[in-house]
Image (cartoon, rainbow, N blue to C red; front, top):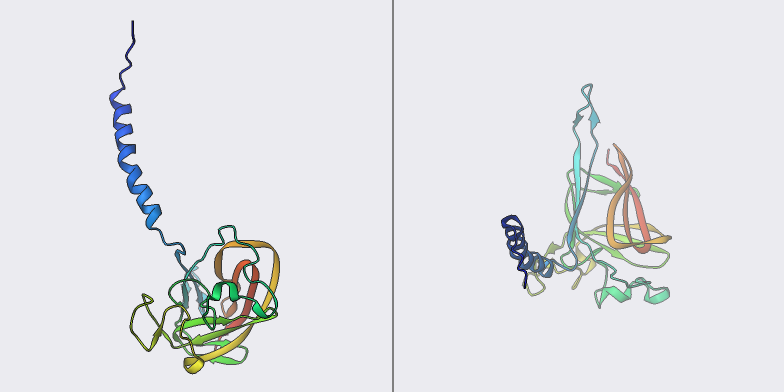
Amino acid sequence: MSMRHSASPLGLCLAIAGAGLLPGSVASQQTRPLSPRGEVSTQVGGAYDANGQFQGGAWIVVEYGRPILRGRQDMFGSGSTYGDGFLLGAPIWRIGADQSTRFMTETDLMFAGQTLPAGEYSIFADLAEDEWTLVFATWGVKQTFQEENRNALWGSYGYTPARDVLRTTMAVSTLSMSADQLVIAFTDMTQQGGNFSVWWDDQFATVPFTVAR
């Protein structure tokens, strides 16, 4: 005699719901960008009042594409070809992936005695094994590679220094551990400044800045 097992109504509902969710979940994974967009922000120049509320601060915000190693090693390489492996013919690094990395500050900042006026910039890094050069420029951002706009770039393709506003060196060190996904961060911050830092693979680059007086 054969025995038949009937599913409970609750179990059947859960199975149907799970089956309905699966295609959407797979689709969302398939459409997720390979280098997801990220944002890092900080607030400087303010102070806490007697009630513990932060007053008078100015925002600094960085938006960037975050590439992932996906098992790749020694991404930067060494010597005269340092960084060439992911520049892919671009003259300078976009410090990220896809669209140009954007740096927005509501207040004037100081980098190595140079003033960066409040505003929005595309930022890049000119890579060398012993130090990086951080570049702030007024290039706009293309949303696609095919976009026609002579005042904007896709990443750093077509970059020239004609629109540079400020250049400053970043100290570079090799860490004993690697960052799988590119990290841009504000480190060792106080109310008056700190460090702008970039970490990917085992390379860590940083430059100090302060609020301009």
